Structure formats: structure tokens, C-alpha cells
Image (cartoon, rainbow, N blue to C red; front, side):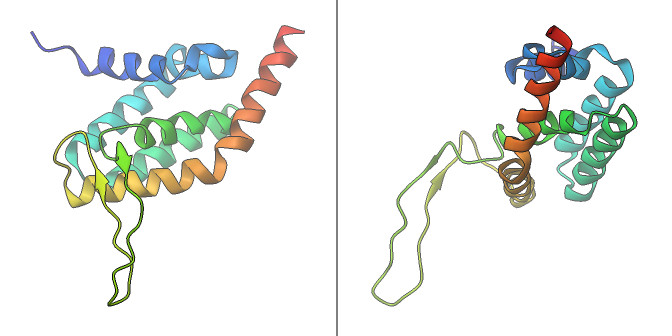
Length: 145
């Protein structure tokens, strides 16, 4: 019997450490936010870039309404650390005729849309992860102390 999408999403979020902070834990304990992550997984499975972006925006809007925008980092992680991003990037090669050749290995065959989602998520994750994680852990220490 196939595992439900809800268990799959919960397991993936847990593997990204949502339980490490009180705010992060909301990704699995807040019903509406968790369902937004389920919608994100459905969008990923549809392999539609615009739908994935819309799902991430819905998660960000939900986090904003909670006053905890930094939780959206888990949406970027959800996409960034997936089969849609390379498991290995080889050193760039500069052919004599010019240009640059970049070779990457994926865990499985990946469509161009999946690669686009992975690249987009990587850019956003790299841009915001440090500040969002700082906010996550600062809010955690504020609630602990």
C-alpha cells in the first residue's frame, strides 16, 4: 500500500528539522500551514512551475499572517533538497572554443520543469536561508528563555 501524501510531506518536513524550533514545528502542527505544504507537494508532482510558485506564495502568505515569515524557509528547503536539484556538480570545464561546460548528476531522470523548480528554489534558499534561520533560532531562544 502506498504511503499517503500527508505522511510523505510530514516525513520530509521532519527530515528538514522542523521540530528543532517552536516556530518550525508549526509547519506540522498548524493544520492550515501543513495543508499548504501538502499543496506544495501536489504542485511538485504536477511538474508545473507556476503552480509550485503559487504554492510557495500561499505558504509565505500564511506565515506572514502568523507574523512568522521566516518559516517559509522550509518551503525553499522542501524544494531545494529534493530530486530536482543535482546530487553532484562537477568542476566546470572551459573548452578551447570558449564557453563553459557544467556537468551535474541527478538522483534520477529529471524533467526540464523539475530542473527549473530546483534552480528557482536554490536561488531563493541561498538568498534567504541565513536570515530566516537566524530569525527561527532567535524566536526559539526567546520562547525558551
